[in-house]
Image (cartoon, rainbow, N blue to C red; front, top):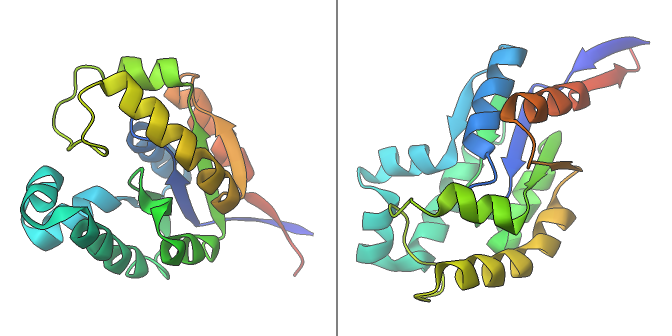
Length: 176
């Protein structure tokens, strides 16, 4: 049997788990294009995520997120999905059609450390307590990430090591 390489990969996980960093490294390793769903949304709307949510709300943002995700159904590359992509059943169904979906699972302490100085994203719950918000939303989303992903990779490690673990997952047995 020949080995093939999976050329369509989606990375899912909570904010700060390393999707963008790992995704960029993985795309380089596989010589594939890298796409950030959030950046594609910002291009489409000509506004930042923060502006979109403030002006039109989370429901509108999630609608646009689904539209942009659909546009990637047939594209080769590494796709960094926003942390809340799994909130909608429609998005989970679309993601499951992608040959390789990886949940980058980082610990709450690592996520908190990575996000503590970032203020460019809107609150998900309206909570003033940042750590409480992370814990509440992350715990609610974990089962959805796990249900959607083909594989779970621990993301507390160095980004280079995480990218290499995923690169190995892209090698598949080709029955032809």
